[in-house]
Amino acid sequence: MTTSPTVSLRFSQAIVQACDRLNLVLPARLRSELASFPARVPLPLQDELWESIASASDDPLIGLRIGLEVQVGHLDSAGLLLMSCETLGDGLEALQEYFPIIGEGSVCDLRKQTDGWRVRYLPGYDVHQAIRGEAAIGCSVHLSRWMTGGGVMPLQICLQHAPRGPLERYRMLLGQSPQFRTEDYSLLFAAADLRQPLVQANATMRAYLQQAADQMLASLSAQSLAVQVEALVRHHPQWGKDRIADLLGISGRHLNRRLAEEGSSFKLLRDATLYRMARERLRGNERLREIAKALGFADESSFAKAFRRWTGSSPAQFRERAQAHTE
View 1 (cartoon, rainbow, N blue to C red):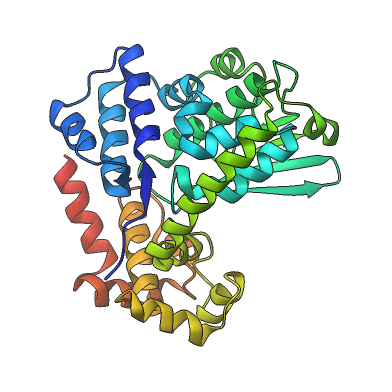
View 2 (cartoon, one colour; view 1 turned 90 degrees about the vertical axis):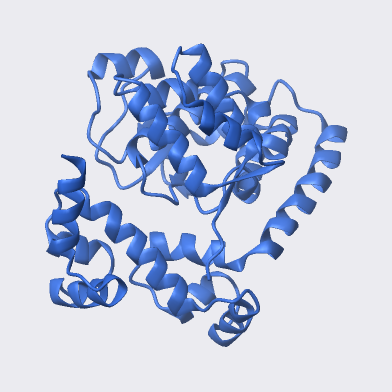
C-alpha cells in the first residue's frame, strides 16, 4: 500500500484561477472534484489538472505563463512565511524547509556554489514534467522579484528540457534568456542577492506563521514517511534502502519498521515508484536501454525482467498497447 503525495488546495486553486485569467476552459467535473477536498489535493488529481491544461491550450509556454501568475499567498502558509522573512536568503531557506506544505513529493533545495547560491526544483512527478517545471520556475522568478521590490534578478535560469517555444518568448516572459537541457530546474542568485531585504518583512508575523507551518509540516510528516521515500527513490532510483534511510537520518531497519506501521515496505514503494516512472517513459520514444539506465537498472534485460514481474508483459508490449491507444 502506498500513500499518494498531496498538493495544497490553495495552490491548485491558484492554477485554476490563472487558467481562468488566461481564458482556458477546464472540465466542470474536474473543478467540482478539486473543490471537494478541504485542504490537500492528491497528486493524481493534480496530474489530471495539468493534463486538462495541456489539452486546453495550444501555447507551448502555457506552464510558464501560469507560473508567472501565481502570487505568494497562493503557496499556503509556506508562502506567507517566506514573504515575512527578513531577507531573500532567509526566505529561500524557509522555502526549502517548508516546501512539502506546497507540494509533497517534489523537492526544493538551496546550495552554495562558487559563483552564488543555486535554488533547485526537483519534480516528484512525470506527467507533463516540462510544462510544470516551467510553471515552478516562472513562479520562483516572479516571486523573487516581487518580494524584493524588483531588486533581484537571477544570474541564471535553468530548464532541464529543450526549448518548447521561440527563445524570444522566453526572454519576453522571464526578462532574460534561460539555459536549456541542464541537469535540473534551478535559479542561480548572486551571494549579495540573498542579503536583499524583503519588502513585506515582519518578524512578529514570521514567528506566528512559523508555528503554524511547523504544525502543518509535522502533520504531513506524521501522515506518511512513504511519500518522502517515494520522492527520494524518484530522484535516486539506483539507491538502496540503507542509502535512502541514511538521507532520512534513520537506519535501514528503522525505516522498514516505520513503513510497516504505514502498511508498506521499502521494496513495495521502490517497485511502485519505478513502475510509474517506467510507464511514463515508455509512452515516449526513449530507447529501452536508456530507460533502464535512468531507472537504475544494470541493463535492459534486468529492466525487462522487473517490468514483466510488475505487469505480466514486456516493456515493448506495453509500449505497443500505449501507442495503439493514443492513435
